[in-house]
Length: 234
Image (cartoon, rainbow, N blue to C red):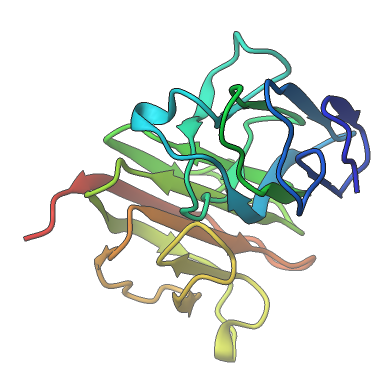
């Protein structure tokens, strides 16, 4: 595990943590971890997280960028406290994690792991569209994809599948779609779905959703199209 305050993480998967973890992190930290996997897209998960809380996370915070520097799109803005961090998928093979602490109270810090997926992304706009790779053409073989939709706290996410066509096998063992009520592969889920099943509309109870897609090495079909929008609890 990489404990250094700043480092480049070039392996296809790995772990890293704040300095001294699980003991409190140092004051006046300003750290950067650049994940740079050889190919595909970075998939990041935090296992433990505990930073000093403050209004707008102005004192100690983690911020995550979709690229190699702080000019890249922000995937997750300042985050602090002890609430679990969502999982995130980069648009490419690099992701930058920034950690800042002030000169006063310190928390226990964090530990995180990263791996890769062949396709997917992170969506933070209030509405959008998720499609299988190459849609409306046939999706490629041997795909593992994660799309994460993240809404602001207090919102839910509504999904409507408008087209769906995958390989049709009993129990959806080969090609399938799963919708998770949360950002992690271990979050509660509905599915798997395959074939031309009629997929019911889905509204999350949390402010994150993970759409998971898998294809095997044999048959390919036209895939799927999903519309999503942020909604307020009724």
